[in-house]
Image (cartoon, rainbow, N blue to C red; front, side, top):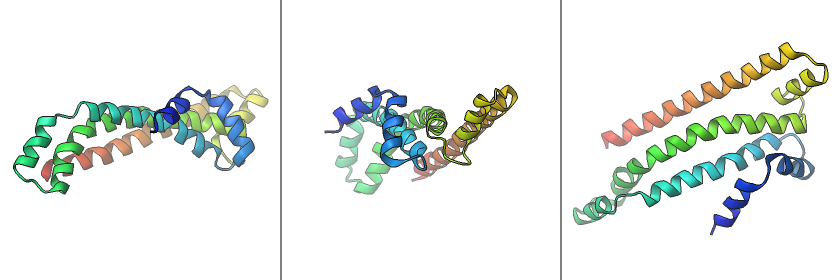
Length: 161
């Protein structure tokens, strides 16, 4: 059902969609929308791949031993899908920052990192450009590490169930 929409999201150039979204919604929430549209296909593709790789024998065993549906979901399905989600998240978080800042450069909302990058370009301030780029890299790295920490905590909690 969502396959055509996901395919369109994967193939539409980011700059084209960013400009269209800028016209439709303005610059205030532009980076959120663009980041969302970049990350959703990554997560969906990885999760679909994970669902195709589920071991049907484990779900059959869970039914035979009459494991309650909640424990079956957590122990059988979620535990097998978590590595795919983790992989998708690592990639999506980095691309989220890249696409969000690119959208900010195009939309130039006040007080954003994208605005600072744009100002660095306009005034040829190479040092500022490198500094803001380093900030984006650092923020992306920290967000990825914090999110992976949360995912690992979830994995440990699942293992204890």
